[in-house]
Image (cartoon, rainbow, N blue to C red; front, side):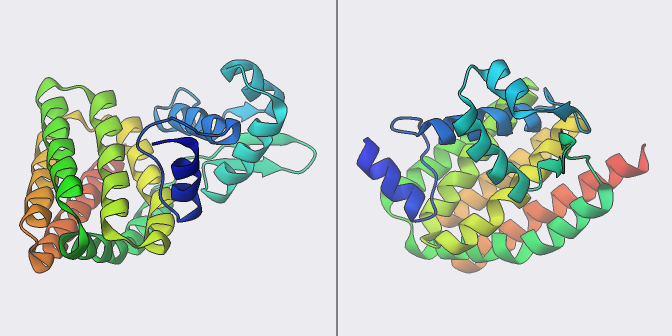
Length: 231
């Protein structure tokens, strides 16, 4: 994908699966978001734009643009005249986010089953297989990386940039919480649900795809509730 097609994808609400042609602001956003999701930047950590620019070897302007997006996504909190901090992980917020996420995931999954072309159906199946392989290896970082890829493919396959944009921060919140609470024991079960969802989309079965999306979100909810109970 060249720079023009990458720019077109962003304008249409879809995020490229590779990094070719990404702007400096896109790169800043990607690197900072990944660090927050992996908890390399811990919840509550105080930061400045200068700190982030130095950490990732980026200029202040792209970092400033990335910070604005991350604040909108709920990953950073800005305190007037006091800098900013990585957003805390609040159990109630996560459960409310899942309430909003469930119908959107169902919508995207059903649309993907109806609209995805052969390339995207194959790519989703491959992404689900990669998720399963990461789960079998107990590699949480790889699992979450492939889970993100799966979400991006789902958004593209759905053809609905509005639902995709609304879902992205909700999915990121869940990935960060999953990483934070180290839900390693749940990886295989969650991977199986991704495989089932990809299979329904590959078969073009919108009803089954919607049900599979419901099952996946329910699994995430149950896992996080258990993590909260164990605190």
